[in-house]
Length: 245
Image (cartoon, rainbow, N blue to C red; front, side, top):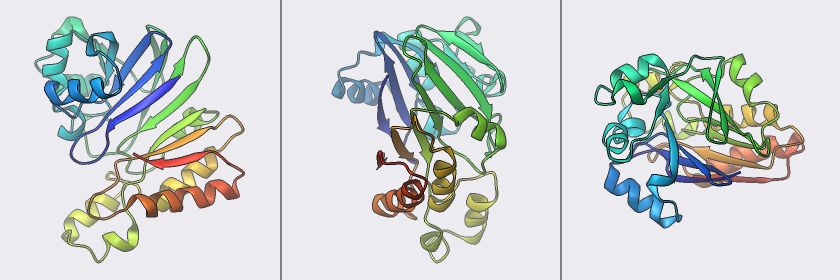
């Protein structure tokens, strides 16, 4: 399996996974034109994508979903509540998935995990390439870490995890107190340190790569996030790459 982040953060999120001839897109936080440009940069044609997975309906994850789906006729996989917010996606293209269940589509088995975030029905995904068995865990916006996610992300070959903020940058930063409380309140975003603790707990012998998602442009820096996650991972015995998207 191969993967690319097309964008990660409050300006837009999208991630491509490829297994042999099959490709899926996780989130669509860019309009069709910008998305096509980013896909062209990695040599992927939009028409080659088998399905679009949506974690939740916030604009930085789904603002391009309806237009892109209409243009390229992708099936859209998400929680029923999230699909209900994408009113322009016709019923025949909707593929609702329940937390704790899995569906298969063109070379991938996709498992949904309910997560805490301030959206209608937010999900993380554990995605397995059916040909090779390679497994990737993708958690974009994550207010806290439920045990179901720890179980689903165990034995992954790659992890794509949110590392949103550095606590020492957030606390004295420019965000008002109400927004800071929303970020830290269990339905917002996890910090670098929380991401590091989660990654270290998941660092089994099969883990080969860790990608950090959704870094705050105001309250984080790639070097801080990478160090905060890499240090506990090294103590857990992991020797692979840690890279901020």
